[in-house]
Length: 174
Image (cartoon, rainbow, N blue to C red):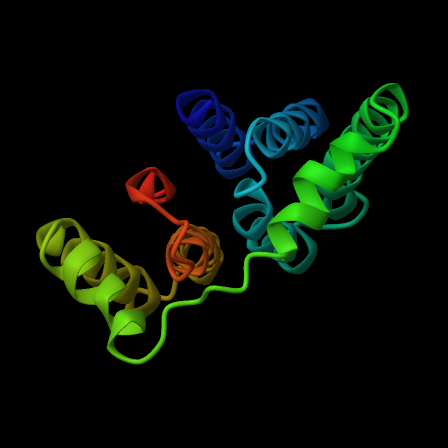
């Protein structure tokens, strides 16, 4: 499931970044929906990409990615929840909300030290350097895209990792 989620997520991001028309945006939205349906961790990653599309894309195109993802996700969730007599939403929304064992104190910082700075310091540093470089070169649309994508991936991993139930596979977006 993790690899399928990552495949659809990265394909969605690729299609959104290098889109050549409305069909690319529809495909990007469909892939975002499939990523969410594979693993709900895609939601906090897709939200910044929705913000990017609403802020940066022009005219009616800014709605295509968002509406496609929402319609597909909404229809599939409604059908699956109906077929399962309410168990789908219970397992994907209600049960995870009951996870209240959040790491406290120094455990919140463990993500940054153990999972980021100790495991991927070069990749993390180069990512920050590239973001700074494109910002300083006044390519603001490109900066906005990578900033929202980077924030979504990092935020999703950290948010899921702060729960005691969050194991190493929640770091897949990184």
